[in-house]
Image 1: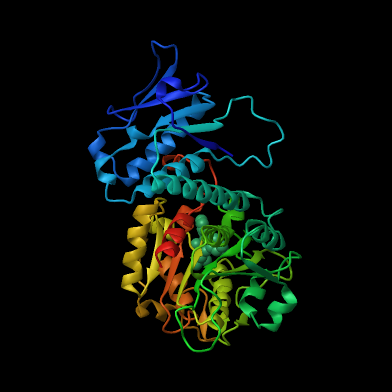
Image 2: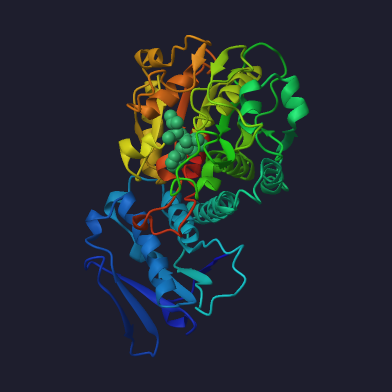
Length: 475
Ligand code: BES
Ligand code: ZN
Ligand code: ZN
């Protein structure tokens, strides 16, 4: 892990092992090394006009610094904090800048190396030292960024792990690993218990494989457990994450080219687990519960068939018109399960539809909710945290396409139309979301895999953990 240190003496006393970063107002493409008169190395990097740097540009800048350091095999870098003052960022709290800085240093430095047997000969960026005096808020921001970056990278490790290794059982164990040392209770239910709960939709998705289906429950009672059945302000926020550890598509098998990265289909699950871990580590005085239904959507003679009808935990029957629309089925049972907590608010996160990529490209996750206030809050926090989101409607009109003539609801449009595919996923879930509870569905499929402009390692992005944490902090 990248070591972040602070250096409070004058720049002149900085040991020679550090390469000093100097930001200029040149275009971001202008980078060069300069040997200074005192024999030290400076790396000059264009950051554009200071007054134009907003939150998005700042995050990209920080990631570019790491990318450049890696490219030039700089092992130790010194960043002068006073060079990071940008007028457009003055509206944010002081700690925000420092947290965002450190968070993005970690995110950009991450690489998934678990399965590399040879160490790369290239030198790695090991340490970043921050020059300058820090206020209390700034110190706290650094600490926060360090911790958030670390947990997000752990979540990326979990998500990047192949489906052969990251089975539902392994995901349950990984959850326990994330929560080590934290006041979080983790329960991992197996198939016997899931059957008892009558989660027929979750079981159907996982019935085609020897990998046992699991239901992961992680509870954090930072405000104290609610004691009575009477509504108090202690009702928990529920985070639900899709935990499909591999999605072949089932009997409606995915074409080649669309399947190989489906080990990432549990990214919603790893994200909500990491967000809960961060909330616990921050010691938030909130009650939060993460639920991760986890199954492998496999192909075998035991697999669910297109045309099967299953009974969900809610009692509603689901006609499985398409075995690749499995995420919504496992989430349906998790939504029903969440009712027992009398939730204050529910946020589900899922790599639910390829259609979300068609709608938004790969720069933002789609959100769907009927709660405008919640939508506005999350949009604002998305900009602030860097996990960008954009709304799609969740109108009842869209429910009509799911009217099955054989069961209560079908899992895709009965006319097999692919129009509005993401909204269709949200509309399906709305049949199962507890009534009168603010609920938002985040389809993170667009952000499952990184793209070059993210300046992150290939694979899991770790989104939308920053957004979830920002929400939990202010909730
Ligand atoms: N896990 C996929 C969605 C996905 C696709 C995520 C691409 C990330 C990138 C999901 O289970 C799925 O296959 N959805 C289907 C739904 C369809 C059958 C209605 C899809 O998107 O094609
Ligand atoms: Zn699928
Ligand atoms: Zn899936």
